[in-house]
Image (cartoon, rainbow, N blue to C red):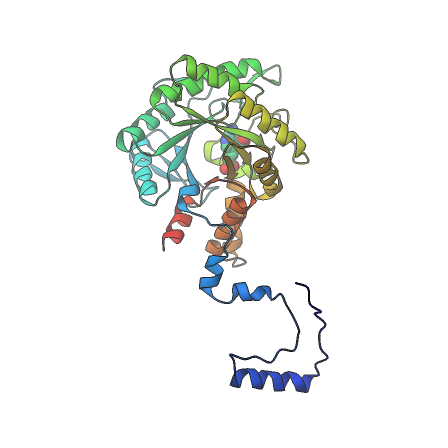
Length: 355
Ligand code: PBG
């Protein structure tokens, strides 16, 4: 219904009259404006606001990334990521129990490697750090969904996600190694592997390699639209994985492109991805939204280390409220279309949500 909504002329003295009348008889207000639609009706009380809420965040939507390091009883603070730690396997297990109790269904493990070489051989060592961590967590807490990063950057001296030959990150040879890495994680008992390398054809190749080894139940969370972003800086500090030369622009996507993201996502779905991911999240909310419309598989988004750091830094300066900024950003990522969010805020957000 459209009704004329002209604002009646209302001199200052009348405003006072109206205010006084409305205070005396609040149930029958004198209206200065003839409005049919008053959107504020749906914002009046907390109960009404709860009824009309379009997006809700739940601990079940969160995935907590963890950094694993060799040692025992180790909780080493990560300088570039305040509040996050490099944990030894026993501490990872303890952390997973806490995470699970908070209602967070999944963790994503990254390995800090001190045995780096040019070929990243430690990445697929059956007794390697990540492989042992996966085994230990699944022994202690079989229900939790354990995910592992599949890429070579923490394991190579050059810090690239694939193999480097003559200053080029080579594709097909890298995929071979990534398949071995994924299978070694599956052998250790991982639920999902998460290839973050952005090599062409790796999702299909990893699917085949897993299936050939009988790991048909192991899922693939594909970093499908992963951009060459400055927001990974703090993470690279955590794993000492900053590339020693060349950048990652020959495999990670250009921030200018969104049609290309659709293409990447479609390819990964065709190749067998169970879940597709957009990364980073906050500067790429439009990409999340487009991807959500494009595919039927679940969509994940990675609220990356630099996004985490920006909120911490601004709150330290007193410019934003840490918890409110965190919740608003996570909600934005969910609203854009992400079903699940990898975030260093997972535990803090889950605590707030259960209060
Ligand atoms: C490695 C990988 C990176 C991140 C996740 N997996 C870094 C990179 O691609 O350089 C970044 C995560 C973050 O910044 O929180 N393949």
